[in-house]
Image 1 (tube, helix red, strand yellow):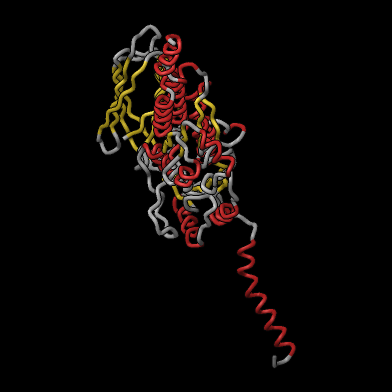
Image 2 (tube, rainbow over the protein chains, first blue to last red):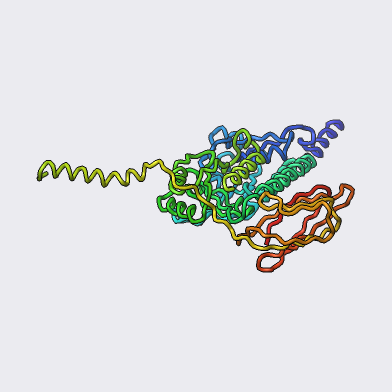
Length: 293
Length: 136
């Protein structure tokens, strides 16, 4: 009887986590957050990225298989800033006990370029194009993981320090590359409006042909405005994106004499050299500098 | 349709001709001349560099090109430069090589713009340091 009481006491004093090596289950809804979760969590987490590379996150809807995984997740990472319109449905339909972390809501929003075609005042949800935001996101994810699994706090803190150092190196590299571009030539004509955070951090002005989503269609008035801007500002190149059709951009180059500067990664990670955040950011910076120089 | 066949043929030909112009404009393959970026006016700027520890060498780059380099560096150095200076400002990249044995050193850059207004910015570090400063 005394032995049984001791056993019960051990179970109460030391929770299940102290004994088990069970990994923290993390669900993410952007390729960027998948990378942050994997880098900060290391071998202490099991990450399921529901939005895969090449999928437009603006159009993504979770499937029943996603909901089953979310229901069992300890931490659910969301881009926020209205990127995931299904967030309430996610909570209700899964009944998850996991913490929903709206990562993007942790920092200031930038508004998208005023657009006659849009009646609403829309915030740009593509916060990851700012390295300062990425550092804040990494800290936010670290803290969420520590709350969920305090006994692995040391590992999460060490991984976060390493990741933040790599972001700092990336910032120095980007500063040096962008310094090759005169500040008066930092005009970024892109197909959809996804680079406001990048622009603010690096002294660019964005002229987007489409609105918030890469599936938006521009009006002829908007296209005419962009053509006039490209001509008046002497913009050398305009940029398309990895997951859309650059037909309108080709027409603009024909009218203005500007070049197609290459594809930028707007909505998340890509493949090959853009399979990591650093790779994606380097690709975007190199493409922009080469196109506008 | 009334009128002579010749007149009708002429009207049809004229209608095709009218349609042809917008069609040609929409489907043309010739491209207009390549866009030339607007170039900023070259203006005089001044740089005053104050080092806490003398570096072994220093270099300043503008738009990826070296505009000033010294292998014999004093704690106080000054230079006037003529650079394209847009209203958005300029980026200057500083490459500094402080002795490896030295503790953290600093460089204070006093920048005098074309209008004579001065701005001060600092760089801290040890060993090899590369940093970009934006002026004003």
